Length: 327
Image (cartoon, rainbow, N blue to C red; front, side, top):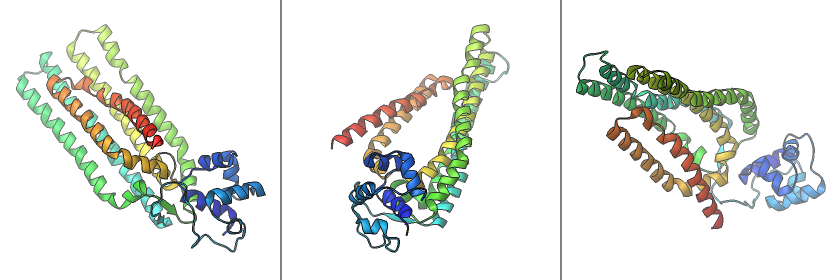
């Protein structure tokens, strides 16, 4: 086992990204990347530092005939049983997440689209475009809303059940077999431009989606036209969210196997600690959304609860991170 492979394995056992290891060694991330790619070799001072922070001897690092199997390693982060992931398991997980991303993204979009029928019928009735009574419009619109939400929930539940076998990858400390790291990095590099394009288009669409509402409000007093503009806005937002969710799930699956970003061992530990707070927070957000929407009937504006809740949750997560760091 060569030095490059040993550095990769020891870094991943500790749950560090290349950036985190570079910070501990006071070198650039590019230097660590070259070491792991066997493009260069660290000098003796850095070998000694690697030996110190990994808790292994310099012989283990430098002698190719010595492997890490059976070597006692001192872990710097939370000590949990490390689960080894094979190449077959990693490939199956990536394929599963790619197919799941479409279903999850569709489910989220259906939730956003669900009130459109109710808005159209109510707008058409008030504009005297149809002769339906108010209870009939509300009843039919609510039926469509519940059907779409039920379909979305069914997608979420089936995805959750079928993916239960992979939960450990996202929650527990893992170690991948040789070759998995390189495979995932190659896939991520190929997917990077697609991810950037979908994310950019999705964000731009979310921003521009409100323009028709502003324009119609400024030039027309026709209630039905204003309702149509609101429905168009929801449709555009649904498309934008579909693109964003789809792209983020696929990229996230690669981060899971590389144990980077939100899926480093440190982040997983913090996630476990913050899980009860997250459940309570999003339950309150859902209650506020449903209570306001049903009591006011203003489904065209109540969606704003979710972006606001998302921004506020970032603040809550930041506060929890600070509190955890003080422990």
